[in-house]
Image 1 (cartoon, rainbow, N blue to C red):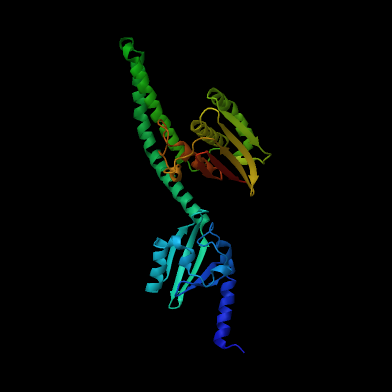
Image 2 (cartoon, helix red, strand yellow):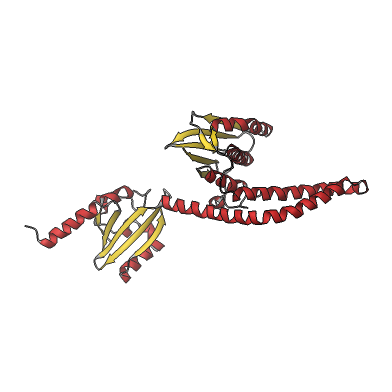
Length: 346
């Protein structure tokens, strides 16, 4: 008959085996002694740290199967936890799947008990929150100064127009016209800032995305044809949405024009609508050179742009519009092109 201590140990193993959180135990020689069911799907190299099955890992040193992590921050934290006998918590991103994991280490004199969980969704929510907080801050600042800036700019523009019409200053008219264009540009930037500052749509109404896309198509096709490019539609039957038509039209024009800007002649931008996971999805895919890796994480930040004459406000405005219309934007980019997905909740 098993001893009481053995029974307790078996009960504990059974509890750990059935935990929903992935976990494993490393002995004092850094060898796997236990891996629970929840951890097994993550043992593949493309998911987390290891590239062997559970059976192959038991009795094997973690650093033998994960030698690439030796002398990294992860290696240092594991050793610190054991040497100091203090719990440690850290976050790590998998090299292949690019998913985030939170790892918790609980040491004792016999080794380290490790738990880990996928926190990719939480990290994405945090990133979205930071992005919107930054946009809101800039929007509030813009709303505060726009009125004060616009009044003097209107006066300056008025005097420039009067001077441009003065026959005695006719030779200077090109200069006055250039200055008026610059004043108009300042006013346009202020208007875009105020678009970021809005906290709710002006007018919500039942509308079909397909109809909106078709309404702006002639304008886009005219530009595409002139530049030797193509706009390709793939529209599915989708339900109507409660959205602000004017705002979504602006979002369409901003994103599709960006796609056309990014492409050379002979390339195409594909516009798709479809339903996925109970959401209506608008996808805009181009065949451009992609977003540079050094700014791809910051494209929703005002003034981040690759265009020589761009303001860097178009994409931030699209993110603000999406939020106000109960949608979220995600994107992927490579040297073969960029795809923006706008996912509308029903």
